[in-house]
Image 1: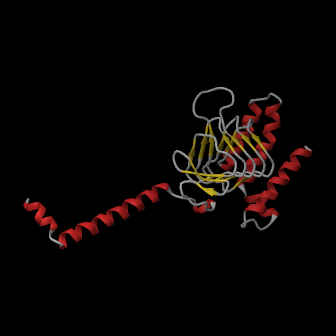
Image 2: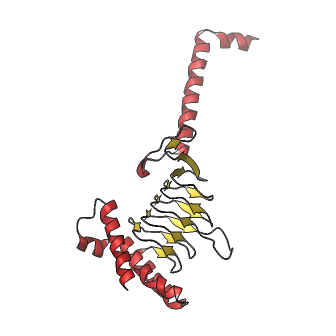
Length: 226
């Protein structure tokens, strides 16, 4: 019971550290669904470790019904865990989450099939998984990693990396750019699709300029005559 209160204390402190909207303790306790989901999990997980199955799952499903966040009671979650907003978050049975991890709405820490044993990801310390990201399979996400919004991560990620895209690819490692990408904050990560469209638009613009120049020099008319 003492450990439970220590864990919840660290979870509450994490909210005040990472969410500027948190103004007072009463507000956090009454209105933060992410905290409510974590409380349900902190209650269900010890029962699951004792070998019980039905009761922890009932507690988990009650938490899911009330918060929109599904955390399997078998998942291992470290202190300082913060789910911001949280609607649609799913955390699988064999997931392991380190210290001071932050998840945003729509995140899935899931499996990739019907494999048995360890089939969900292991998340290191101080990791940020942005809105809508999917981290799938028995892979490892290193300490201090950032997973961009909407990314689908299927391979392990080293420490201190930023991952974006579908499938996820590393764009920053240990503070150094990979392929000239830029390390930006969680809310402003690189958008590969937008970048590609921008490149195509620039290329089309250059081709139009070349076409106009050829028309002005009447080169196109000479080619058509030939």
